[in-house]
Image (tube, rainbow, N blue to C red; front, top):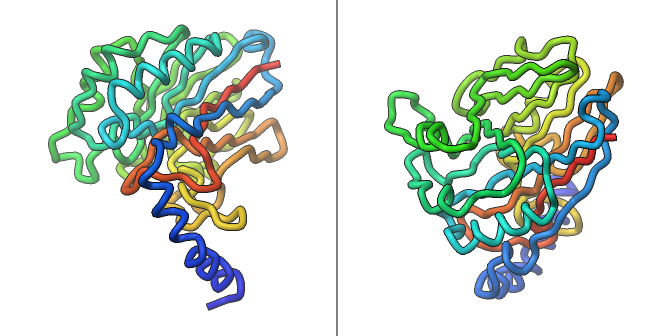
Amino acid sequence: MNRHDFIKITALGLTTPSVLVASLGANPFHSQLCNRFYKIHAPSSLQGTRLLVLADIHYGSFFGEDETKLLNERAASLNPDLVFFAGDLAHTPTTDLRGFLANWNAPGGHFFAPGNHDLPLDPREHHTVLAQLGRSDIRVLNNEKLSFREYNIIGMTSGLCGTPDPTLLDSKYNLVISHEPDLWDCYQGSLLHLAGHTHGGQVQVLGCPVHLPAMGRKYPQGMFSKPGENKLIVSRGIGATDINVRIGCPPEIVVVDFI
């Protein structure tokens, strides 16, 4: 065990009572939800556009109709032009989304790319999330591209449940919804990759995530840049899994203003 792991494990042991107490308290969605703002240079046809990124809602796991109403109200108050659902909107591939869809009417064009919780690991298994969303006003992009004059909106499938298609990116400016942030290494060109998946670890000790999932270990949260207007924004997400607690990494709505 190296020194970094020793310090993290020791600190986790010291904070475990706090985690347990917090888990019995208020739902972190209600008590901690925040907005995180970014300004991004973009082609002229995107300038002045506001984009919201909603990741890891996990509807059906500590998140229901009441939370949907509050999220809808918060999203509407931000006056978005575009809303990207960056995966794991549902908690399982068969989660009933009627309660979410009946209470969601925030403004803007709505686009969804699936996360690993939205899709079965085995494609032969039963799943309904994409079908339910396909009957809604939320446009499903599962390895699909919408092309506009100066930019594309591209939704990739989950890298844990399928094979994202980097060839969809072209010489235009690419807005890429791709759930797992470590896939950014596969995406080349002028782009903004919007991701979630990590939850920021859900619990952080001394600023370090206690646990990060596969395909979410290199880029845990925040914005990262490469030369050539190639950027990644990783949301800490909105919902929770396993235990409804967040320590040191509150849930967030990502707000991108294009300039």
